[in-house]
Image: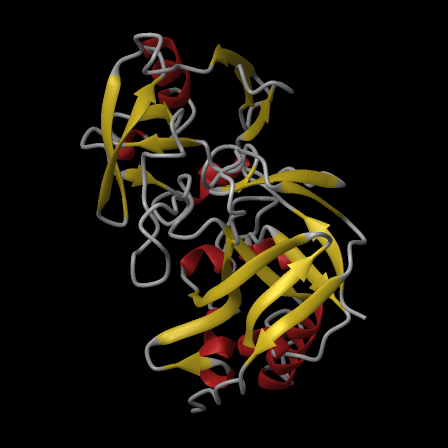
Length: 300
């Protein structure tokens, strides 16, 4: 029987993860997931695609979300209150993959603290907070209803991966590098920055899922996740580690131009709107409620 093997959330987009034993689910994602983000002078999201060292900052929000403490790669701490547009914080026009929305901007002291610890080539760096996730940023209407929103994740409220698919991918990587154990070394799940990790499935079973239940909550499985250079970054050191897993995905799990690992989820909302839909906990049962034949990858 499939089970929820791990939960991860990322309070600041592209920074280090938290891995709690349980997490509340809101319509726009796990509570506290990607509610903060670094942006440049134009308001465009700054992520590990731009600078892998961003992943070495460790964020810790307070239990009520009213403040955030950042630990820099040098071990220095910086704590700030969560800015709010309703309370008069400066409004920032920001974007993720071209979708523009409003967020509340943190103070100049936070920008200065970050600038001291990030490469100067990034230019101006600001920290923003999404204090209105219920209305600020809609999910792509091709995959969601008009009232469904997302936090500052790349595109969808949650990302699911499975341990069986990672095992299969690692086996492929090892087979592709028989003469070089370092290049063929197994990769950890953290490279893929999922929210939900599921065990007890067949490899790539999630490619055919269309609707699932985890614990007492239902989710639509709306779109496979195309992977990028972030998966080549060691999440513990901030270093790029060569072409894997993108090379192996390109050879063994490519769909058109997309190198796929994991599936994007949208929570199923109840008839009566609610800000918290329920709670997920490690060990929860995972049931497949609806599935279709899994598509065959384009192999090279």
